[in-house]
Length: 462
Image (tube, rainbow, N blue to C red):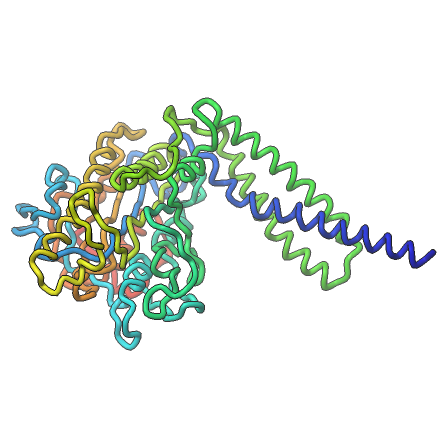
């Protein structure tokens, strides 16, 4: 009799443990994305001066990374700081020259091979926004916090999404991708910690739904609110059951449950943040159906995801990977059937050099179109969205043929709300790229950061 009762009790306990596990898993896995569902509307009141311009408009920061460097002779302008002439690659930016700075003489010393040997493509991406030496391993991942996440940590509480990460590439977070370096280095430029990359979204539909919720126009706000309420109910149920269970557990199990509940409380904090921002913004446009067949349309659509995120103040920090360094995509739409990476090892063949320069130009044309749309978008203070933004466009590789990381191809677009002196070609003479990042962090109100990566000081003349 006792044995039978003990058996029934054991079965009930096993069922209860499984039920609690499944309920808890549902809350902890699904809910952390909740804070990303609702975009912010309008301006926040001055908010300690963080991530705002002189007019009080939000100050946006974006980092766009293109693969495999650029052909130097076709990239760099000729002439002086103000009277420079764009070459072929940057020709599409000529109508926008008053809104951009071409920055020469910026390096990434920690992306050079040195004792680490081969692996310049992994270092090109992994070092781009971190400025640190990567640990060369496919499993023991150690990079550094990226500058976008430094800024997001300071200002991310002002918006529904602390930051937005986008890509037009696949997502690979494990395995060996480049001469012993983890794929995580090569496919990510945004890093929350030395061991945790911020995985970018490559599906424009999912990116849009993350910003504004699922459903058509007129349905998104209600759908998002309903999802919050449902998850709040699940969370309350889990917390209530956990409190009842706690008194029946031994010390070791209570410690495990406490660790679990710490994660649940973080979920609760995210729900509270989502509720704090009120009703969802509901743009009067269709949700993207997915990834377009045309790569040009795909890139343009992802740029538009970043634009609308900034316009609705859903986030003030974004990154966009156009393609991982080492990307071997072909560009048949412009008559180039060979792979990008294969062509980049041109060995001074003029025909191959011309094809690479045309690919470089294609990427700049897409970027120029994005800048035009940013300039045509009126911000909350009556200025343009581009006026109130800082957008870094560049590559972690300089010359793809030599795998060099000095004199990186970098453009700084936007006016930062009036804090940037655009319309110039500036040679900085071999300074770390991280010096620029320090200056951008200062403008965003980041406090207490004296060094970043291999920085040697703030970058003057920006």
